[in-house]
Image (tube, rainbow, N blue to C red; front, side, top):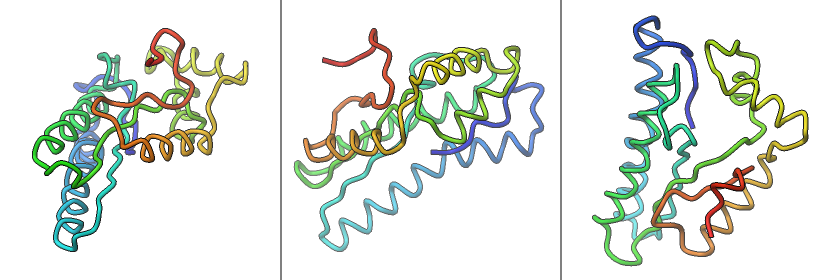
Amino acid sequence: AGVGSPHGAAADADPEEYQRSVLLNGASGQVLGQAFLHACRRSGTPCRLVLCSSPAALQAMLGMSHYNAAKVGYDRWAECVRLELEPGEAIVFTVVPFAVDTPMLREVMELPPEIDPLGAEISALAERGGLASPESVATQIWDLLAAGGSDAPAFVGAVPPELRQA
């Protein structure tokens, strides 16, 4: 899925760390995804490709410019690739995991509010037992694959009630 660091304003970030994050978060999913699609097509193997987007793709977030842009890019890349493929050739879509209990999310919870204002909100959710387990999210993703994927980014995890898809 990538990394969240560096946290904070783009103009203040270490240029080398920022570059590494942009390449990992933005380019790697497209490059690896394309290689996987290419290999599947060449071998005649049915392709099932799920990219991990983020709630960060839904709105601009303070201190997360590299991460936000990368995740928006994954959503658009999957949409474009679906247009290029023959019907039934592949399932390609993104999932948007909300509040999944991962090391990356735990890192966000430790950040001061001026660096990441969501940390306190996520910590409160964790204290109430509101984080989704990685296992439950994996089951949701497998269910989406069994149903043939999604034409829009699919929300998984501890999705806020106001964002739950019908």
